[in-house]
Length: 265
Image (cartoon, rainbow, N blue to C red; front, side, top):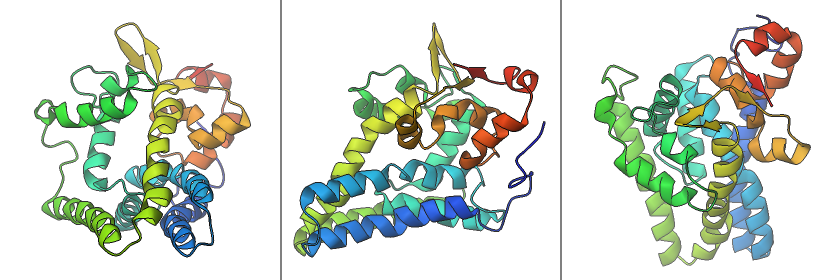
């Protein structure tokens, strides 16, 4: 199996492309809110720019969760934690464990927390997401599988508190409209975009469940909306490959290698 020269199995101190993406999320969203609050941007522009930046938020926490942001674990965790706060989607460490459980037991009706979401419809996804998070029974997962440390539990509590403080403070100090148009509305729209382009489309729904080998040929706008997750099958087969190297990985490997692990559709 060949890997892109830019990656070649050796993780950098910081992956430059992913680093820029994380920076866009962490700096860009507050900047949009500040511009709206200072009447530089109208509300619709804040929503548009906020949504474009929020669309990057999945990759901003997803890559660090697989240690693809840096060769240093603490840098991965720091980047994912900060990005999750900046995109008002806190609880990075719990989400990271849930995501790794999904990888380990993908398609298992009992052990895969993502399973109900794949079966949802486009419009029902936000409700199904909340319900699946609330009802999933982690007792079915071995405690030894990526257990969260006390420090990680505290870090998630802090991140949840910071987002709550941001929203409550914005009400009392008169900048709630900026938070609403630059963060809350974009997050609402992104729930639907990610439901379809990242959660539903990449996972082939089959009778009795789904499989994770699908790699879809996509138009340019679909690749942008999914941030290359139309090639999500590569990620499930080789999760250490950075998102921006999926195309290179395909071009470097033979049809035989690819067909044994993914399904091109």
